[in-house]
Image 1 (cartoon, rainbow, N blue to C red):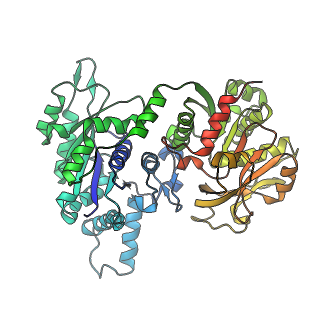
Image 2 (cartoon, rainbow, N blue to C red; image 1 turned 45 degrees about the vertical axis):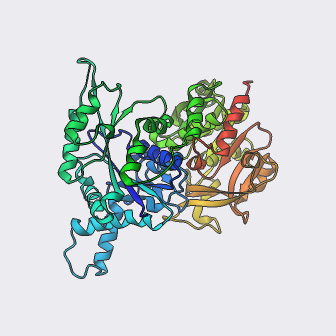
Image 3 (cartoon, rainbow, N blue to C red; image 1 turned 180 degrees about the horizontal axis):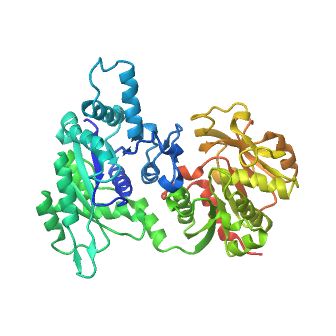
Length: 537
């Protein structure tokens, strides 16, 4: 049987949660025994989000093969068992670059290159490429943006054509809209949904299912009214009520019958979805045994999406320990006045995490946070830049190397304890000097890292330009640093931890990208466990 495609579009306003709906649908279908993958079509002209500001775009999610992708791919991987790649994220920039390259090579045989059919064919080819994996039952394709956006039109035209190319019985369309509640009138307004569907119909796409985001429960006639004016069955109008936790979404959508509708529409014969793991997650989130306060000292705390995977992984670590992780978002620059100010801001934290980032801003504040955690024996977890700043803090305040810094932050610094990636040996890179994607790491027996993973060799995803300078390894080791994770040939430091600290560990990679609510990443699980046992001194 050919692979089935489900296309998810959005209307009325942005940020309705298409990614969560698409991810949740994937988890429900997996629960029915189907093999699923998700794909994101992004209308922006950037080739990928790798060079975009976190303030503009939020987090850049990295796949095993080193692709810098949209953060929705993080949702897809957290909600399903699929391991995604660069093939699962396509942008306008990629599409036009490919078409122009083909035109320059003469592949179009002198024809005038146009949006239809050349751009739309390129989009369709990328969608269909996923179906080459014959074991895949369903591919869920999310189209970024909102109906009515100019930049989305080629993608919408492409998915419209897919029904003709692939067969009507193999394609389904889900449209996500907003049904606002007018408090003053005590009414739910369906007109925005009607207009959104009308716009979609004008493009040539009749939705099979309409998912309606709402903050107020539907009235008895709400579904029938939408069904009547939008030309769908009443059962195909799905109420998408605001929930306490996004992890309840698979359970809610199953209750609303979304999976039954789509399986019937696509001719998929499966058993009833088994969502026991999600039920357990939601139960823990609703009834945690305790709360643990974690200070996240970052550079982009104004935009929480910049640390989306970090936030989710900390939540997963709490779920794995049966507790609620209370995250306190602390702007790194606020700690730069010195130890007294840092102590005042960090007081009450049972754990400190410093995430990744680029550039000089906020570095001194992160170093103060790390110093506070080290001196007070507070559990500390450094991710990527968090490991690099952990190394700088140790060099300054334990090794007493005056002026210890990084070539990234002070090229003239006399003690570059973190050095440029291109200066290191045996490092393969993607995208210039960036180390991207999954790399192997050998764990030291008896280390906290090895205890957390219970494995000898692990594979974790990277996104950084700088490495630990090996000239300082011996001095750091003598002063109490255990390099508990290194590359298989021993040339690169992947994990460092302090021997005389209850739990202080920094990693060069991004473990948050592999954490799931149903299976927390081992290091986040261990970090939250350490924070739970911490007693202020």
